[in-house]
Each structure stands twice: as structure tokens, then as C-alpha cells.
Image 1: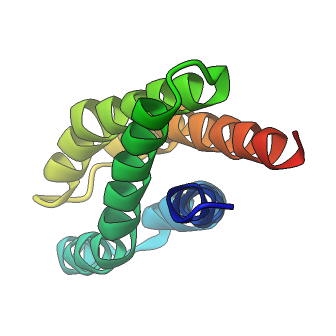
Image 2: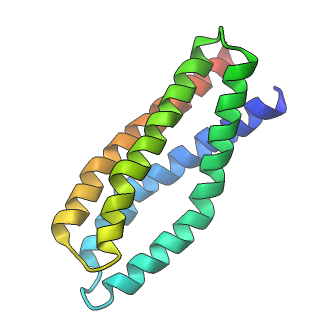
Length: 138
């Protein structure tokens, strides 16, 4: 397994595990944070999760682009790159604006929207991991 593919595999598995934890445990817990403490809690969440997720997302993006460029005939690498692009679009056009609202105040409607729209990324990262598993087996 070459190094680029290894990085892509590691990022797929780690980000899939992280997103499922966020989706099932962490985002729903936002409802239970006291309104007075919510902004501080949310700032803490944003900062700490970014330390973990952003480097992995950059590794995922760079390795996905490189794998596709190195083997454009590989349909798995093409689909992988498309999925990564969709994850980035969902993150920066849907979830980040919701987080921006939540960074100002607790809003249960926005929390619900965050939980509901985050299924997009949860689904996409899960599919990406399955594609990578298929590529490993092949």
C-alpha cells in the first residue's frame, strides 16, 4: 500500500468514527447544555474539534486529489474525490453557518437543524469508508 493510499485510508476510518460519535453523542448533547453556559461550551467544542478534524480533512482532501491524479481511470478514486468534495461543501455551506449562529446563543431549532443536516456528512463519510474498504479488498 503506497503512502498516499495509506493516508487516505487512515483519514477515512478516523473521520468516519469521529462523525458517528459527533452525530450520535455530541451534537444531541447540545440540547442539555445550560443556556447560560452554551456559548462558552460551543466555543470550546469548535476549537477542540477543529484541532482534530481539520488536519484530517486536509489530509483526506490532498490524498484524495493525489490518488485521483495518479490513477484517473480508477472509478473508486474518482468517486472518493467527489464524496470528499461533497463533504467539504456540506461542512462549509451548511454546518459552519449553523455553528456560527450557535456561537452567539443557544438555539434549539439550530441544534435540531445541525443534527439533521449532519446526517449528510455522516452518510458521505460512511460511504467513503466503504469505498476505501472495497479498494483495499480488490
